[in-house]
Image (cartoon, rainbow over all chains, first blue to last red; front, side, top):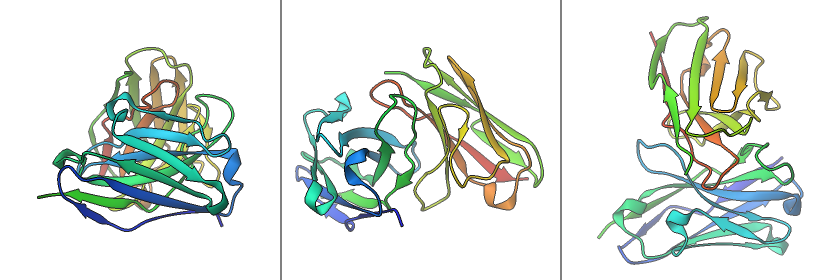
Length: 122
Length: 107
């Protein structure tokens, strides 16, 4: 079955970096994009960026432009999201979610990972 | 950035009620809206995309409509498993923002 399995919870100190992985299985990795969405406690989801599973092209929210890197390993069907210079405001659950490539503005995020809790605390 | 608002922010309803949630965009976004359901401790679940297309496996009591700047999610007959928070997301412009959510609670 289609599945996205994320890496485990992380506790980081301010100023550190975190790298979250998302292992995809059960579908053609290169025909979908992978998006990263985070959700702070009690808040709405926040879209961070995405990577084209085929080309590897990426697009990030300007809010994270200088701090986030999204990458992929097609042989491992795994996508990574690295966030640098962490502050307490980065404490959140981080989700990967896939979207079919194709019509811009058409498809939603149809399969989600289980989420990775990242806590930033001194 | 495109801003989304949702109304109401909180809704108290009974089983079998008809429920409507509205999402408004700060500028026209054609039909590029998705709706998600989220329960505590779980990832969001896609219900509707392209404003009105039902995601595979989602019960037909869920429907979506609208275009431009105003969109609605309707649950025709609320079931016990539908008590959750509902989010809209615009899909046409980066960043692909989410609305502030509507929590549907049991009356």
